[in-house]
Length: 558
Image 1: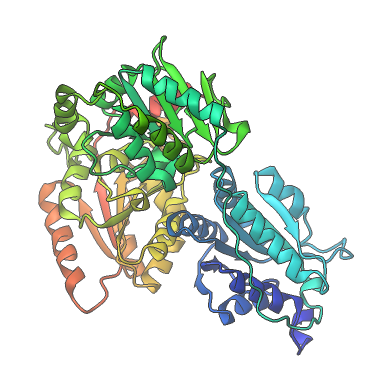
Image 2: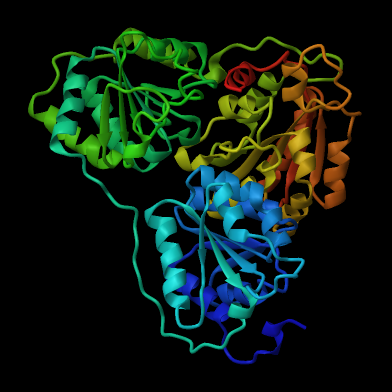
């Protein structure tokens, strides 16, 4: 019997969960063990929704995706030791992506040196880029939890909040409701930096604005400045959808760019990164930046300016505030030209900037379907009001480029750690963050089978989740990267993934040709029925693409 089970009054664990609820965390995900049982129930008692996952790794990805797509701080709750280690990959992804998230974890007592649960949880957290914090005792629990929450919000960090089980079980007086309001700081650029940026815009004739994660909350301001500047718009992968519907939007810049998009970005004489690292993924190892192109970067953190490549203009400031200040300066003396926004460029963008507009003539071969043609067909079948999540692997560009999204809250791209297997948890967390939208997951057979336990979670929640499994019976990235080597370690026999899905209680459909998509259409039609549809798993047997173009980009950086 644990210490917390013998304590009848309120404990530190009760108060920790209650304070997080008071501060406004949005939803909690986890696997409950003896170490985090009380604090998880305290979160629930405070009105925080909770989703029980089947594995802590899946729960971590759920919390990460929820935080990204809801705009609220998500919580991952885990047992000490093994519970935390099971979640480390998902925590690493969140930390590297600067996701504001709380990992509420039990910890072994300081005096229990021989406990099998004992590991250095502080070092473990910091090793993957998270912030490690701690509840120190009954007298500090409110301040400790509040500090961790403040760090998550104001610094956009993933915070691992450790509570040793002896501390968690300590009695404490329940405080009154905790009221505190925190927001990420809005840093206004200094006048000189803003003037330098405006001067660069005035001198440009072919400007391109590329918005990244840091620009997701500044879409309207960046778009308005782009219109006044004659600039084309693009995004990094994580900000996909930010400028959806804008006739001068090029879509994703980098490895996922269509030929037209890549050519227009490479032709820019000014590229401005708005909360965007302009790293090797977004700029194709610099090949999208011309020799004479002026490069500017706007970011709230001075350390981010020029971190991945030299820049000519660096502006430390909030993207929305910086764009508004630059627009005000331009409005006083408007440009006398249209910049990159010519009729010819508009026609090119409309005709071929989207991958969906690039013809695909491949027909199904030997019971396998071309992944591009499949994605285009599904884009037409599935409702447009969707939230698309992407697992990692050779396949990942097909759903990213050939499935459209309504806006920046319709695309969840958890790729900072480049781990396969996080997609299913990501899709579940994203679905809970945006319950009015149809959740869609693009995944490979390797990543899906790695995370298969969370399919039961989706079934239990009756989520109308569409899982598109791009099934090549292999770890495709390795197959294509290592060429003529012995592939028996990364190739597998045919697996009936649709049958496995049905065994979990989902609808399973095997797709080898376009006629098989009629079953998908029937499932979509059932969404309007009063009975919950539950998940649909599409086991798409895809043709060999010979190695995707984005995979070649990725491995060029290894």
